[in-house]
Image (cartoon, rainbow, N blue to C red):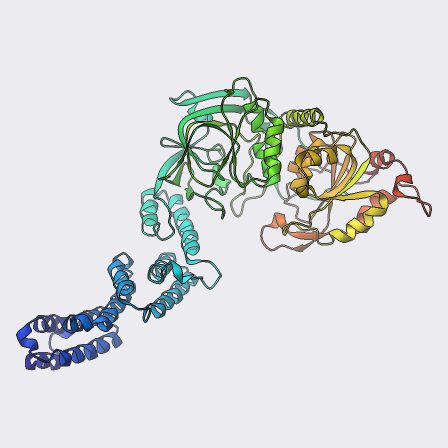
Length: 618
């Protein structure tokens, strides 16, 4: 004991040397004698002093000596040592070495110290995040999650669960590394936290189009339609043609094909197909890839993590996959959205009905699709194929059939790029329209009725709300308009409603794509907010392929929170009514809407008479 006290009082050699000498004495039974408790008190005081002078690593060693002397009663000092050790490693950003200290704290602590440390880590992580220090922030969040455990329910100051915060932060870091071509570094970085976010390992794949692999082993590629021109849409407004801010879509349709890919992996709710060392993804392999913001692996319902460079992509390797012998892909990113469904997915059925597509392969759809989507598939299918609903789990296909989107259609452009306004090829849409209307007639779903006026409700949606929808509906009712809510109808009911209409007024939304099924004499007024970057060309080319005409009436933007496309807005009812008033006859008291002038007379001349209802300039 005397030797121990002499060392405590001797400050020569510095703290590190002192700890080394004390360690030798305290582990000597003869030196400790019968007074270990006194040595423990001195070590405790020394550790506190060292910790107070920003030497947590040395303090941890002193606490560890005290814990060793205390034996079974050393929990207090074991915890203190682990806590000091953890702070020391973090201060040096040696986060990878923190595992043993975390394990000791979780094993020995009866929830006395952990909540305090977890809070300190959360505070430090947020502080680093605000300073833009991504890696320290992620590591502090990781340590808080590992120390607190899943039961902690940890939420960041901006409302994100910690695991989501780590995943999102990692995505930004991966994107930056990939942009610099540092794929190996990105994979290594992901490894440090993937267990926390419960992700698989990442591997690098070369992004290619299906056509690029044509003729290679395990790939059967058949071109069904060659590249061909697209007619330029004639955009019409109820105002002098405004200067649009979007980028006009290219006026050449890509080749339409059927590709049969053997021994591949696919991911429901995304567009990723992995074959060997390749990622088969037409959009990702497009020459405009550098302008496109790919969303696979980003949206909340995605089951895979992915990050994309110009030519390479990092994709989460599927460890546990559902196995399916053969299937035709009708699943993918945004397959649940009605507008995306019709633009990107439904045209594939033309390829799958082609005689060159094997007859015995089932159709595979995402299991979160609404019933109307499956109804469309069954209506278009000429082979009576079974339909397989895929759960959110990677799928290993023995054989997977693929068909393309009919046009270059980026989900989103990168920040700073103009919105790309896709123009759709009419030949594909005309074929779809014909087959759907023929199928509806065969099922007795088309009544042959005409002359209806429809107002399309969008009140069930939180985005792109027409905030004064009720006011407009009431203003239109005396003019013979019915209010319909497409999302509450079956698909065939929607086809019938739009096919019977002579005049439609509604928000420019997914439901309005049903304008493809209107008769050629139908006129559509598309209500929309004031944003001039909206996809006016897309709506026009899609709807007018069926022969109907759409004219856009821009209202006043009310709220632009979130995506600019989904801003809420209102339209003055008088602006809509003025279109009718200029052509309709006065209605005598007691007359019903049915006694008004024939709908065909009003509709046939209404929009054509507008002074500014003409083609938008370049």
